[in-house]
Image 1 (cartoon, rainbow, N blue to C red):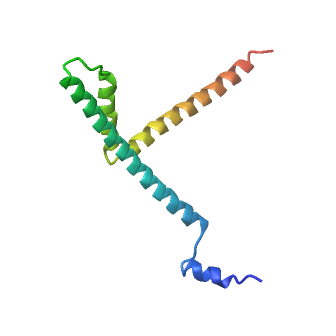
Image 2: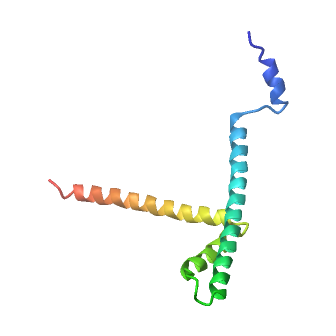
Length: 118
């Protein structure tokens, strides 16, 4: 027979539940991903600076993709800020809104064409 009182002792006086565990895990993973995005932004800025400086110092002898270097500088700068992850989330939520709007319009068009078909 299993003693359930030992589980209650391990859970503590406030109790342990799955909802608080998942909420805390979600918040912790969000913090970690935010830090990872900031690190990627700093790496992108560093690489962009390297490409720009080496391209300028070679006096045209080194092939440099200036558009990529400038885009890396801009995007890396946006991501390396403390709100970089929120920036990515807002872009993703805009895409989600667009897809939902397109999905709603598609359904409206199909229901509209059904009224004209015999």
